Amino acid sequence: MDMERWREEKWLAGVHTWVDERLAAAGLACAGEAEQRHVTPWSTVIRVPTTGGDVWFKANDASMHHESRVVGLLAAEVPDLVPPLIADDTDRGWLLMADAGEWLRSVSPREGHLDHWLEVLPAYAAAQLAMRSHVEDLLSAGVPDRRLPTLVPAYAALMDEIDAEPRFRAAETFVGELVERLAEHGINETLNHDDLHDGQVFVRSGGAGGAGGAGGSGRAGRRVLVMDWGDACVSHPFFTMSVTLQGVLSWGLDDEEDSVDTTPFLEAYLGPFRAAYPGVTQCDLAEAARVAMRLGWACRAVNGHVPGDPGATVNRLKMFVDGRV
Image (cartoon, rainbow, N blue to C red; front, side):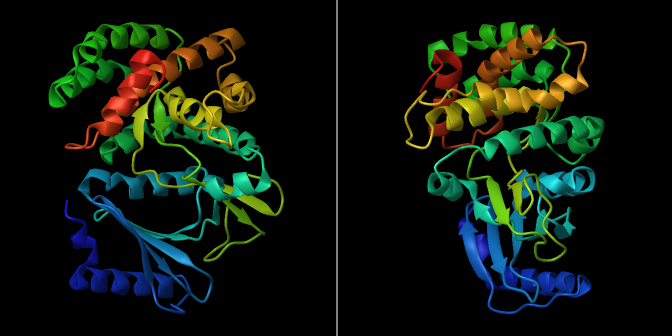
């Protein structure tokens, strides 16, 4: 889709009218000029200064309209994980949310550690567990179905779409083998962010946030929030860790591959699952996570593929087949 759609005067005028109406309903008003901070072919984000602090408008194209529904469900079930939701329009894929704070991608280097992830990961896992009862709601809202039985045919279709090289095509059998092994552990499928990295996590200092107060996971005086659910799918929950642990945390603050032991972060993530699945042994959970992190790259390749732009898809396939790019 042409990015200029998001810059059309008529469309922006409609957005500003909608935002003004929703702010008024929340007891707020604009306090300055709105700024379109982010434009991609599939979404745009606009910062709006208000009498209660900055708020953020986001619009998605049809392929990601489901994000507004996902955020609405999360705001109802696990409000501490997302910024306060001021308003949404699920038909148009619009969201208006309170400010989330500062990028974790900026906070971690400044503070010199990755410890915020030890708070984010168990909070995110708890949200996944809470969303198990909403799988049908998510699918009805258009969230992509990447549950285990769908992966082999979806992988095969992707191979044809990108005219994949033979070794990637041959790995279809490996997909099937890992699907069977992972299914044996009996972990229910649920919401998967599918792109959970340090650019999607925000840290907000202080207590209440604008437009209703900032929820969050974290210690007193600090909130850690997860944003940008446009790539979300319904899948095995542990697939998230492919990107988060192998694609981000293992590289550390200095961007050196395998420079960080990710075991403590995986343990923090698995904690809520141990409580939720007391019949699954610790070793079995760890084995399920190991299998899922490999298979998760195949899911990410399928779920995150952008037609006409195979570069990222091929890198994810390399992670799946080779274990590294």
